[in-house]
Image (cartoon, rainbow, N blue to C red; front, side, top):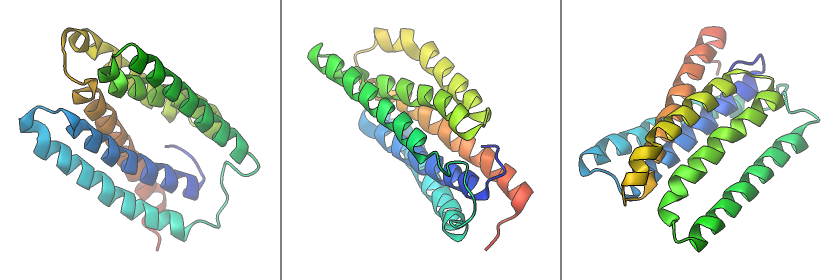
Length: 181
C-alpha cells in the first residue's frame, strides 16, 4: 500500500497478512499432499507479519486516517462484497457446484480492491487486483478439467499474492518510517 497515512498503511499490511494466513489455511481443504508444509509455513509467516504490523497499528491508532469521515464508504464496499459473494455461493450451491467456492470468493475478493483504489486513493490496490484476476483466469481451464475443490489452486494464489503484497508494502513502510515503537 502506498499512502502517507501511517495507521492506514500499517493496518493494510497487518490485515492482508492475516488474510494471507487465512487463505493459506483454506488452501489445505484439498491440497496436493507435498504442499501442506508450504501452506502451513505461509500461514505462520502471515500471522507473524500481522503481529508485527498490528503492533504498529495499535501504536499509531490516534494518527490520521484516509477513512476519516468516510468509514461508511469502506463499510459499503465490504457489504457489497459480502452480498455478491453470498449470492454467488447460493447460486453455486443450487447448481451443486460448491467446489467452485474458492475460485468465486477469490475473484470477488480480488475485484473488491478496485473500489478500494478509490476509497484509499491508492493505485497499488489496482496492481493487486490485476495480478490476482489474471492468475485466477489463467487457472480456469485447468480447474474446469478437474473434479477437486478449486481451493486447491485458487486459495494458495490469493494467499501468496496477499502475502507478497503485504511484504512489499511492509518493506516500503520500513524504508519510509522505520519500525517506530
